[in-house]
Length: 196
Image (cartoon, rainbow, N blue to C red; front, side):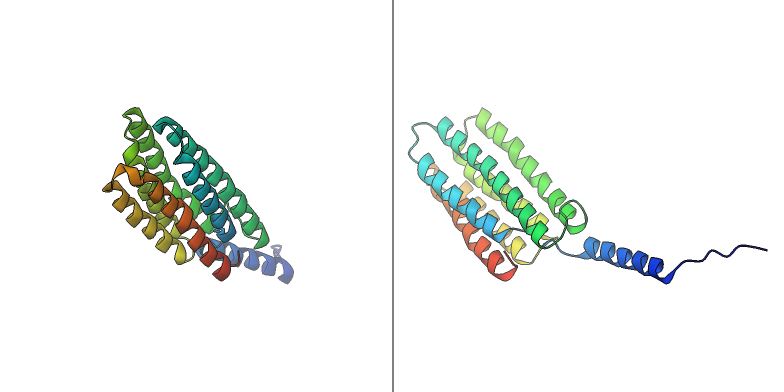
């Protein structure tokens, strides 16, 4: 006689709930984009624009914005982690992972282009390239996030395109408008509409 394999209802229910949760995580949108973190990133960018506009050399200008990029990355990562924890979601799986992986190609391209521009002392092109690459990263990552995120990325792309064809003397204005004002504006929208 063959032994029947008996599975309890509770065990089956737990397995079903786990499957449903994992399916929803894979299909859902990434909602841990930090509105308050975006506001803080914007404020730090405005301060950097003010400081860098007074620096005596382009190399110091570049160093100040490189420092700002590192600071903004730290602020954004910390704020994203805090928001994910508050919403009991994960950054490493599902929509969070797709969001992060979608950001990376354009950010890496921006980093490589920055090295080339720095090597050839083409400081005037940096704001446009940075804004454009960041915008592309946000648009592609935003495909897995709330609908306002790709709109924000498109605004960065438009500003970056305009910056590429504008006088070099306007560089800090574009950096302040993009990494400062756009982050603050969209950060406020995200904080108000999507829970922080």
